[in-house]
Image 1 (cartoon, rainbow, N blue to C red):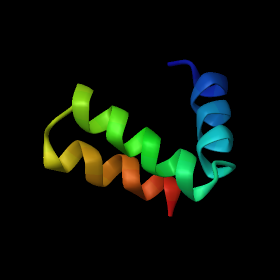
Image 2: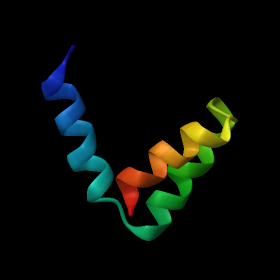
Image 3: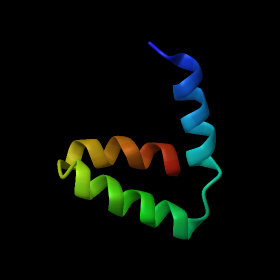
Image 4: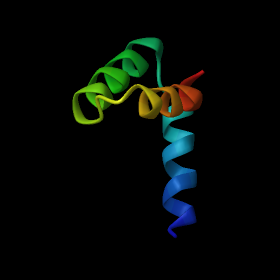
Length: 46
């Protein structure tokens, strides 16, 4: 597992503005239209 990559992604996601967060959620929902995956992604941006 690439722990450094995951840690970096979390840091980036946490630093997003509300507008960027909304865009990320929109993009993720297009790629992963399953509700449980969006819930996981939302946990990073709260």
